[in-house]
Length: 106
Image 1 (cartoon, rainbow, N blue to C red):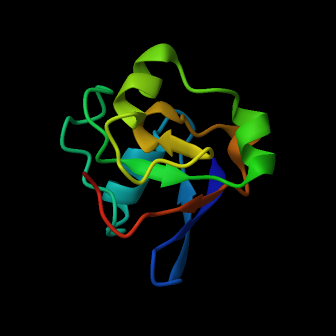
Image 2: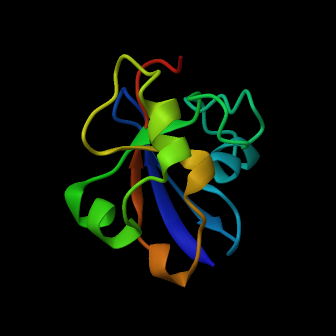
């Protein structure tokens, strides 16, 4: 289990306990955190679970896969620290992860 902090675009912070094996996308949806749509259900075939991470977490979690990169490229608000929440799995190594949510999902 890990504590994950979601920061919405307006600055609202919500800390949730998330079971290992749960994706960041599902953690947000399961905890009623607005700002993640997850239209494809976590299949990495859209970009509606776009999040940004700080550089420390980008280094810890590694680079996006080729498929994730192609989906991120569809997002006009993509940043160098963008990831898809469906592709980040919670584990003990993600305890303390801070996830920033964009203003809009595309």
